Amino acid sequence: MALQAPGKLFHFKPEQVEDIQGLIKNGHNFKLLAVKREDEQGFVNIHHDMVYIVISITIDNKTFMIR
Image 1: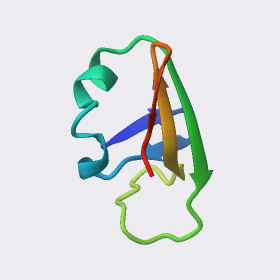
Image 2 (image 1 turned 45 degrees about the vertical axis):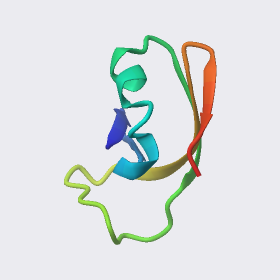
Image 3 (image 1 turned 90 degrees about the vertical axis):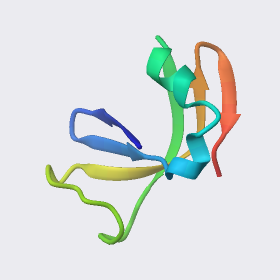
């Protein structure tokens, strides 16, 4: 699963967001804490966006740790 912004892709492993996937899909306000992924392996990036690994996500004022 990933969230996309212009030129940026915020990557989640599926098992990391199983419990909050519904909140992500129905949320209105998001705040992400993420680090840039340095390698080019592991994720198909057909648009060549900058890929970030999410550490935490805040959805409608509720924060969830991802890693």
